[in-house]
Amino acid sequence: MDERERIKWSGLILSIQPRSTVWRYISNNRTHRLIGYNLFLEGESDEKLGRFVVAVSEKQLATIGFRVGDEAKGAAWTKLRPELEFADYYRAGALERIRPNDGGFDEINLPPWIDTPPDLKTYAWRGCRVLSKSSWSGQCFKCKWAAMATVTIAWYLPLKINKYRFESFCYGPKSCKFYKRGRTPVVPYKNRGSFPDEEGGFDEIETENRDWDD
Image (cartoon, rainbow, N blue to C red; front, top):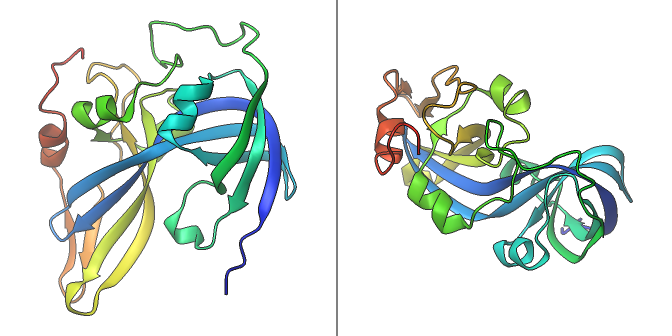
């Protein structure tokens, strides 16, 4: 039964990050798919008062040009399966900037980078590294290069049984002083235990297009 509801929301944009899904299988290999952006807000919706996340499309962000520090409003749908969507609301519409950035979140050239996020092709070209969740929720939270992805783990392929979780990643420069990899992710599979990537080999593969300061 579909229990989604269309709600209205408004609030101050605290962060804008890429929205992605990740598929993992056995050896911690991963496949990323970028599908839009997440707006992290402080405000209110028909459901709650406080912080919440709204998923928007690449076209919507490019058209309106939301920035950190803007006040915005819109409508969206509640999620049907919480394990598959990090954002609280998705399929957003009726988007509007109520009040632009007042200067309290001016663009800067040092981390965290909070200027306008690039297009999704740029994120895909840059690739990402695993980021500790404490860094993601702390010093990196406002940064346009931080991301929280929905991860699908192929736990038992013959019966198409999956497990789900959320993982944080960084698309920013490898030289960033705030970057911390944190705990190595492990990938479970039925009757085979878990498989970690202790040396960060997949991070190197994901970001091989870039030099240290890119």
